[in-house]
Image (cartoon, rainbow, N blue to C red; front, side):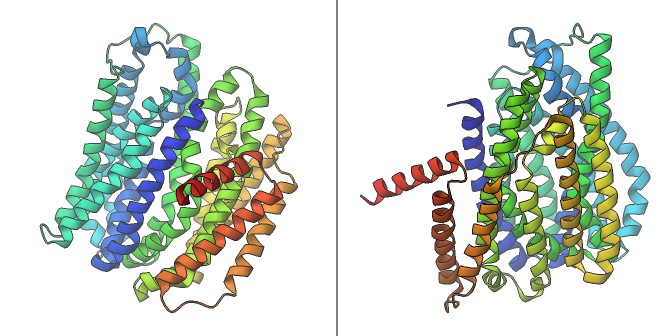
Length: 494
């Protein structure tokens, strides 16, 4: 079993477990025990700290994946690469502090005097530091061909800690302020765990070694880091800017409703996260070896497998949309079309494969930056246009429109520069099967119990969709995966 398959399987297990725990916390517990404004506070802390932490990396995460193969030598402690990373982290955090104190007054004014968020704004300092430290250590660990440990900590362990902490809040061990404080500190625990893991693997060495940092390599690393910084910031801004802009137009409560329903739409993207944990490293190595055929194969495979997985998850969610709002409080129904637009957006993203990764680690990596800047501008403008007209649904539609345009630009660019064209009739068949499955399940009358109705629709979607995908033979590996699960099921019932 290869590195990609082994790491992807492990990461997938951890991510799925984390999503299940996160679903219990975000979809079941938060709406029941926290107010919409309190949910909004947590979401805004995560949004702002994610953006600030990305800025504080100074783009060195992209340089780590691209250039670490040149430093890799365990006997020589990877030529002091971790010491170099530490210098970047400390410099980046110092720059963040300057930016934060310059923006603090504006952030408070933008949120509004009545905003609950302003009471916790200074917690962004430790939260950003812990997020930055974890991001850089995880990137270093991924460069060592270990994506699964970071996934375990970030996707599963972190959500278990949050579930435990919110349980203490429910049992009145502390109030909401105490919960927010411990929520922030839980990030420090993840940093400590990952650090201990790397020490046990004997991959921690802070001995300086600048022997490889010749002029050409140094210039290349600085250049790529600069463009990676802008690209990474754009990526996070695209994910997080909507909640910040909603807070500007409306209130913490609308942010809480948006983030809760947004969560359901992001479940569609779940299967792609494991692949994206290890794909950058493999793409970077293939490009380093000038193996464009391997890159083309990865690109094509990623569009097919991710589209199938994304459509399957979207069907599971949208055929149960009425049941979702049986679970959530009535006030959250304002986010119904947030789920639809975000779900469709993520189908587009998954069907586009790893186009951004390929551009990002090619000689045209600067193009990713230009595309990302255009994306940020586009999503801000569409939010300004749609938020006053459609409310929180407008933010989701703005994201969908921008994703369609951006991925079309990426597709055209890769086709013109490399001749990559990953699409075929298989993709059309997958979409046709998705529509047909939805229509078949949609017309079935609802059962009296929403729990039984969820189970019924889930079983029907699984049977109809997977059977049709299997016999359409859209992808050999997907068929093998279905056969594998089928054989396991047969053995289990025997």
